[in-house]
Image (cartoon, rainbow, N blue to C red):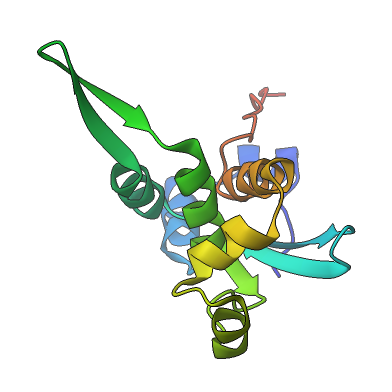
Length: 142
């Protein structure tokens, strides 16, 4: 993992330094969280905007009501899909889980084994790892 730059070092960066920094490969952040009720750890990674939008679109249903069309996000499906896509460990689609629980996908395992609050909490963690809770700080020229 690369060292973070100090504010002074960032102020002194040239345009070329900034471009070179943007060209460096980066990995999505990863964190491990405990689900104490189940006695397990779940390792999640951040997702790209494209991945999150794909999941959001997949979990949005269009409904007709009195001639009006409305789009509604299925929150349970969205959180389960976020968790499934962002999980490094465990493998929610492991054949032993699917077979024992008589399910056909990792997403179904997540919905069956996790409580609603656990799914929301893990979904929120995925969004945080994906940069949605990052606050940007202004760099003051000294």
